[in-house]
Image 1: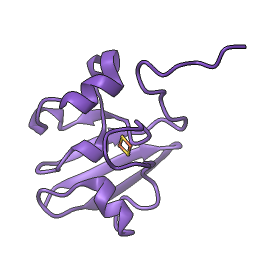
Image 2: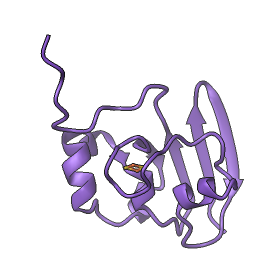
Image 3: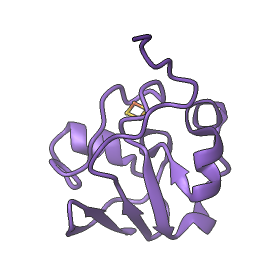
Length: 110
Ligand code: FES
């Protein structure tokens, strides 16, 4: 069973998940990493779940088109959309306190 570590708000949350688990699906049914993982759509559309992979990224599949679209240059910083990942190996994540804006998001005119 993969071991998942989530760093957020200066706290460290750790839990084991079943092989091939999606962390957003688990949080949605109130299992670890609930309530500490931020997410919204669960479909790769909002980027609310974006987190930086600190360790274990070598076991993840390459970013899909949704991740490439929403994260763009942040992929190079190690960010992934957690809702798009099925976990098969140990993984360590950092989620910013403030959600990162999706790439290409329009800033309102002032
Ligand atoms: S929860 Fe919306 S992109 Fe992952």
